[in-house]
Length: 202
Image (cartoon, rainbow, N blue to C red; front, top):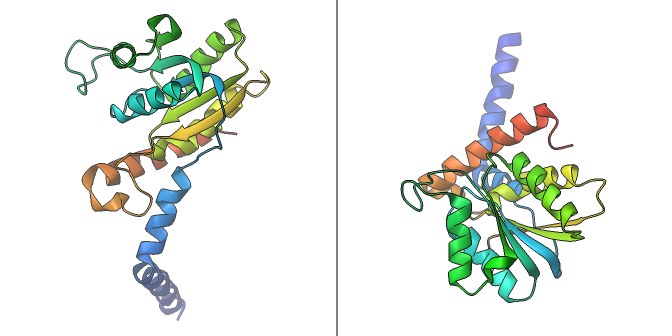
């Protein structure tokens, strides 16, 4: 009898998921996406490791007077730009090519994680006496970026505003329809859990 009840409960749970599958998938995507109401800041930081749309979004914000300085993070040899390159340096080149003064750009080349992004940029912000920062990343990455940056910057008085790429392919109501969206969502939830267990989020 107990086995029958357990099987019935599991069946009902599975049935609920099947019947409301679209709802739960949308909720999974929605949770990962975070966006602050932004205002002009001292600097914009574009987090590395994703498509070029991150950089173009940061450039667009800078050109619209949302930041006087631009920072870029990333790692070595990102296939997005080709072999023997660095995401942060290539992002800087793209910004300069699009009219951002080079002396107002800062590549951060020794970052390998979102937590590194926050920690290393914090040192720069404090050195330059910045009081506000806009963080640009892919939509699925913004929830974790929000938690990490706000924790790292907690006692600095620096205002953190997170802004997702507006023309990203990643959508809360369709991420599961293509391979990369499925990969990004599942990987991001794994990273969220890892960061939570390490105490990097709260």
